[in-house]
Structure formats: C-alpha cells, structure tokens
Length: 227
Image 1 (tube, rainbow, N blue to C red):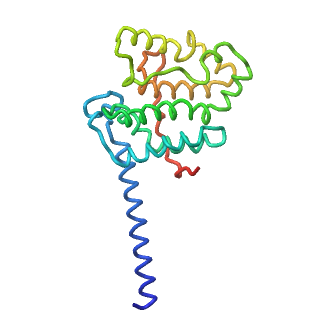
Image 2 (image 1 turned 60 degrees about the vertical axis):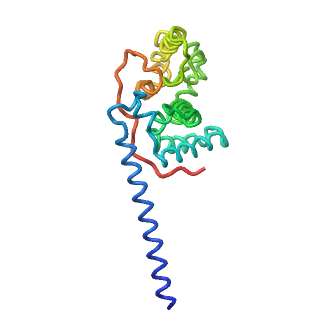
Image 3 (image 1 turned 180 degrees about the horizontal axis):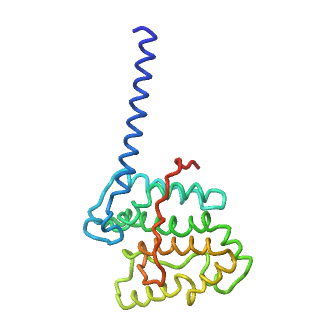
C-alpha cells in the first residue's frame, strides 16, 4: 500500500476515534443532567436498581484518587472540577444494595460536598474565620457534621435524635455562622456558603432550615482536571 494512502487511513482512524470519544462524553453529560431529575434526592427502588458503568467507573477513579492524593490547598480546585463533572452519580450510588458501591457514593458526597468546597470556594473566608478565632466557627469548623440518609442507625429513636442535633448545628449554634461570615467576610461569602449548604442538605439529613435554596449547584463544566 502506498505511504500516502496509509497516512490518510491512519488520520481517518484517529479522527473517527476522537469523534467517538467526544460523542460518548456528550452522551454521558446529557445523561447526568437528566438522570433522576424528578426524584434526585429520594432513595427509591429506582436508585437501588440503578447502574451506569461510566458513572461507577469515574466515581471509583475519583474515590481511589482521593485515597492516594489527600486534599490540599494546592489540589483543591482540581478536585472540585472532577467532582462537578460527576456529582449526580454519587447519591444513586449511595443507595446501592452493594455495600462497596454505596460506600464510594457516600464518601464522595461528603468529600466533594464539604471538604472540597471548604478548601476551594470557601477557602479565603475560612482562613479569615480561623484568624478571628471565634467560638462559633471553632465549634462548627471546618464544616458541619452530617450523615447521608441512606446510612443511619437501625434504632429510629436514636437516629432521629442524632439527626435533630446535626440539623440544629448545621449553620452553627443558633445559626451563628450567618453573623460570623457576614461580619468577617461579607454578604457575598455568606450567600455562597448558605446556598451551597442548602443544596447539599438534600443529599444528607434534609433538615428543615430557615433559608431558601438557591439552585447554583451545577455551573459550566471546566476542562478535565489532571493530577
């Protein structure tokens, strides 16, 4: 076969493979935007039977990465990018009857929803609050204690009491975080913290809170993060 023809066939093969990958990723992102839109935070039978290979593969890769490379100030924003790409996978996985799958979903909900947020989006304000050395922030920091609804004690009375205590401290004792953040960092940082915690509250205890939810969870996708 002539060299020019071989080169042309190789280029076509690479182009087809690249287009195939792009299409696959586009389909996956469309799936994430549409999956469970009507029952996203209700651990239903549909969630328990849910299985999406790419969702599970990407989530497991992120879970393994967070074990190998602990969260730091340096890599927090890259972790945030990875979390944003697949965060709709986590809750359905935490509902899985398979214990290992459920643990991956549960741990990623906490890691992405609380730890990564505190180290990236809320990092500057968190540092100011630490320097201020307020009792409210010290008792609350670095983020509220939570439990995922699918992982609770079998004793319903004990669990109800524990959830109530968590909910009462979700924004600090007597909602003291509002005052602390407003005075230390300003209204914009308070709105960011409040909106984020209200959104992820649906993943966790589903507390009844005296604030309105602002749906800002899914922003524009950034390029794939590299570590």
